[in-house]
Image 1 (cartoon, rainbow, N blue to C red):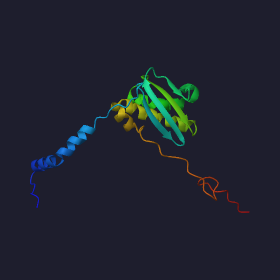
Image 2 (image 1 turned 180 degrees about the horizontal axis):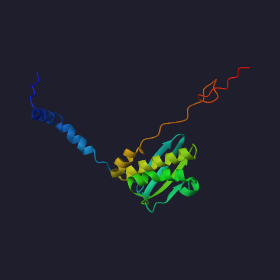
Image 3 (image 1 turned 120 degrees about the vertical axis):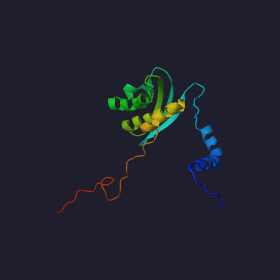
Image 4 (image 1 turned 45 degrees about the vertical axis):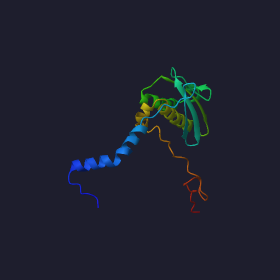
Length: 166
């Protein structure tokens, strides 16, 4: 039978003995390494609704191009442009990275969300110290909400046909 522990000091000593080897292994894997290609860029894939964005970031002057067009031309609405700038403002690196993105599928709102998700993932790969701020803001989590499918006997997913008494 195991020996009895009567004080907090004995408990602390027993816990340190038991997980001493495990604790050292956890501390070794905690620091993350930056992930960059031979051109100094970081790549990530972002998704939202039906849109999928491939995003490359590299140090630069803050130029953002989406599908070969400037951000202002592709996403004309100011709200969508604001969505794309959010990861940079949260991480505190405004106008320090150039972004080149290709996005397919979905509508403009879903595409803006997909590019935002891709930028956030690429930023944390480029500089792992930014991960905490981006994760706290919820930008690294894929928004899994998608359109509900239409059901038979219904007009839309849940909407029924209008009832007629006569």
